[in-house]
Length: 265
Image (cartoon, rainbow, N blue to C red):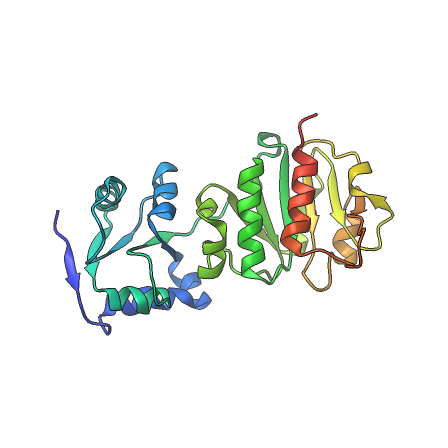
């Protein structure tokens, strides 16, 4: 197995990988950056091999790393050995992971979603924070949701910050995206309950009939769910605030709704 050594910070491959921190570059290439053997192992278990595997010179021998090398080469990808300085430069961290990888992005078209394949699906309108989105994807994975649908102008789920927050679940959870118009047209055929969350709702979340498959709609961190999407829900609910705080973090609120919808009957 032939592996190239890169030591220069100005190498074109290094520049190309670093550019994946920019949304424009990710959109143009259809690729994204993931860091660490845990992430790579999750991808391999789900049949996703890296297009480029960057291994630090001081990376310790590991069976998973050997597997990653083989799987990368098998799909026509490249394995390169890089210095610690390059890992720092690419990851933008002083203590970077010793293995980085570049993967192809995957989106599931709305028309390919099979609602009955999972008890719950999540739709997010104009979510802005990559940490929130990544945490929601991780929670959706943990609860056995079918996928996450991004509506309108949302943060990129393949940004480095969002991917990190998924802790590897970016490979396990289907991601779809749609305009408001596309989503509303598609939602009309949804076979289960469509449930929105609003601060001005009068129904508590635990009192709503979450007929499966449930589709949970969550709004923007600041503005919440818009009137247009709220009107498309079968019911809008609120999560009761019992203390002084008047709202919850989006990822926390989404987690509560997901587990309410997936709780065993």
